[in-house]
Image (cartoon, rainbow, N blue to C red):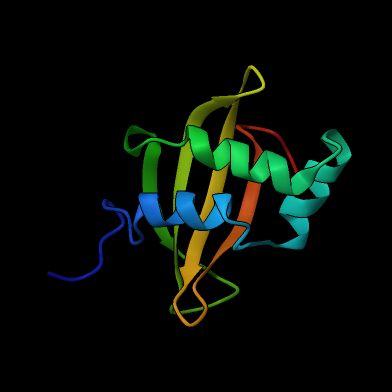
Length: 109
């Protein structure tokens, strides 16, 4: 069976473990949002990932800026009394979680 936007591309448990271990990189947009609102961006990223559950999965999308790479989108998990939106993929070679978006759900960034 091929790729579909209706199922996660990556193991959520692996993404949570890698992020907790510090094996995550954030793109500029995600980093900027976290730094503007929190003192420790890496700790917040790990905490937000720890709140993600399978029920928060929304869809997988092919990244426009990285054709051929699919990212999983999760939203609705609550951290710091706010719902969050996260878009990420796992880079197979290292492995490391690449966080493309991490912000309050619905927030412009």
